[in-house]
Image (cartoon, rainbow over all chains, first blue to last red; front, side):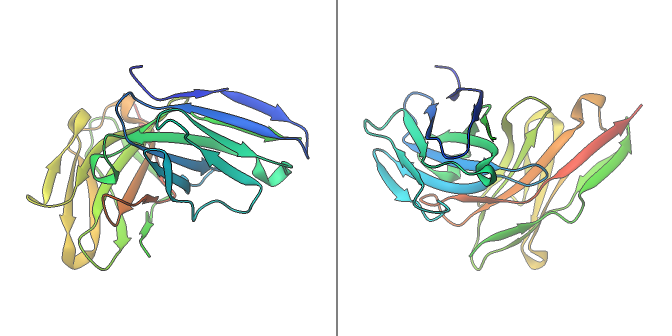
Length: 114
Length: 113
């Protein structure tokens, strides 16, 4: 597609439930990034993929968070046993080769845990 | 570890006035530096980037930024602000092409008519 697509755009879930957030990057972009943005703050890094492999997952807050990119294109961010503190906008970005090219961001998924 | 500070949380300027948004970074070597803009209801958009070469870089929408190594700064400027520039602006720093970018907490720009 022409841009980075994230689905769903909004997700409301109950505390303790499992959620999956999807990111479809720009075709041909090898690098894919997940960030989380809370109100009044800048994007906070979660995980970065180069191709199919997670090159840096140091930003994942705990083992409830996991992400995959099995074919080097679409990525899914998975959150188990959601907590109210997980509520935020989850942003996905892709880049042609890496950080130096700059990122193209999707519109984000707003996750609300009630 | 890299970090970014945007000292101004909120700036208000009149339409047609000049603009400067401040960004200070912390990183030991020459970093990758970026400015992104986030308009209401829209995703972040890259305005400009710097890694090497001319320290004054031009971006989209009439923005420019100047890298000053001695001050660890990468301030964003625009000579004449338009009402459509009202948005949130984020400065970001990257340590390498193979790593991540770290973002500041943003500056909200309000444009008065």
